[in-house]
Amino acid sequence: MVAAPTTTEQQVTIKLKNGDTLKGVLVPDETTEAITILLHPVLGRLRIPATALITEPPAKPWKLSVSGGLSANNTDSDLSAGGTFQLDTSYSEGADKVALKGRATYEVSRDQGENASTTDTNEGDGELRYTRRLGDRLNAYATTTFNYDMLNTIGTDVFVGSAGLGYDLIKNKTTTLNLSVGPSIQQIWGGPGCEADPICGQAFAAGTARAQLEWKPSSLASITVTNSYTGAYVNGIATNNTFSVALKIFPMGNQRLFTSLNGQTIFNALQSPRINNSVSMQLGIKLD
Image (cartoon, rainbow, N blue to C red; front, side):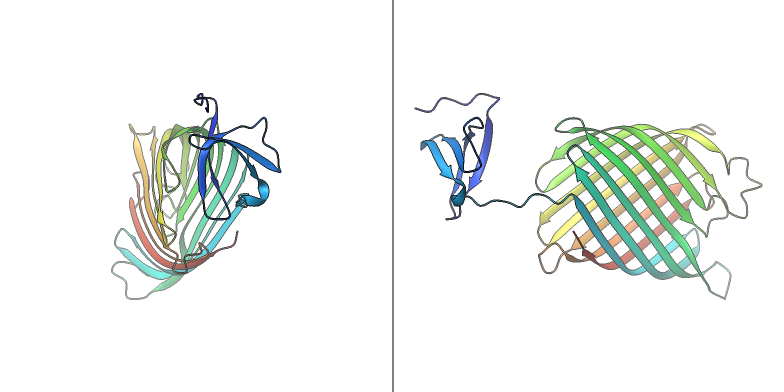
């Protein structure tokens, strides 16, 4: 008779090369590289040689994807279209993870009331985020984000630095929903109207909250939805909110080549204009 497992025993699922799957309690004190000891609820104590197991390759610490394609942008009543390039990379080791994201666009724009078009690099953003896992769902983070839009008259550049705690409300193989919150600092600068604006160029204490949903319904698609809110303590609370959606399609089903549809809406009460909408269609490759 097999004793009922206690809460400290490790429930595992083992896949065999013949196609069978065994679920039971692992006996770590007796398990070696050559033999796995499993307490099965029906078959009892099993000695499984390593040669019979399907071994999964260890997760790679580095992840990297690059993509590029066509983009369109609407800042207030100014319209622009052109190309965009995006980089997404991360490194994980133990409980620590560092992620870097960057995006830049080179677009042809036509301002409201003008007949001529100009070519300029008018929009982009970047984020550097460090996360340390404190438990199964709890984590601490520190992040810096930078956004620029050369079509703005006040606040072409925005910087936000924040640190705090995050929690995974949902965490399984296909879905992760993480919420994080913490104190922050925000600064805007740049633009032809910056010198005359009493707020532009100054740094203000703020608070930042972020929600990120990552869903992988199948090997052919993934969806990432992120909303980041920063409230700067100036004139009451000044809102800076960024909402973005990324849909990736992996037509080959191998998680390497992909097409993506990306949309982003930014509202910042300290900038002028306050609203910036952008959308892009990209082709990319994962290099990890």
